[in-house]
Image (cartoon, rainbow, N blue to C red; front, side, top):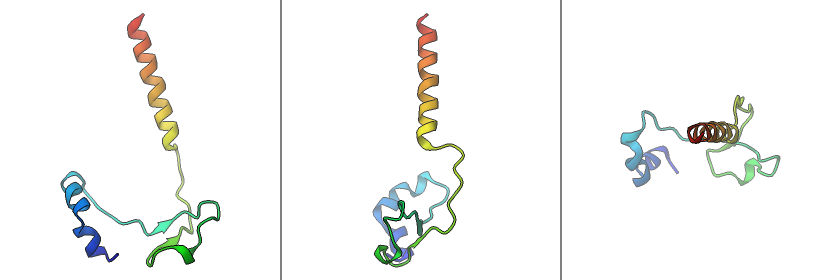
Length: 77
């Protein structure tokens, strides 16, 4: 889908006032070799360099959950 069509999509128009920047991802992970470039839509490629993850989303959620639990437990004591 061309860039102009993406930006004009109703979903994008709905969130546009809520964000400072909109970009389209064109590099995707290969899902442990299960995804190859021949099955990707035009304009997409497999990532050559993987982004470095300092904290994974699940870890962030776990930290938040533990801190909320501690706070609630201390308030009950």
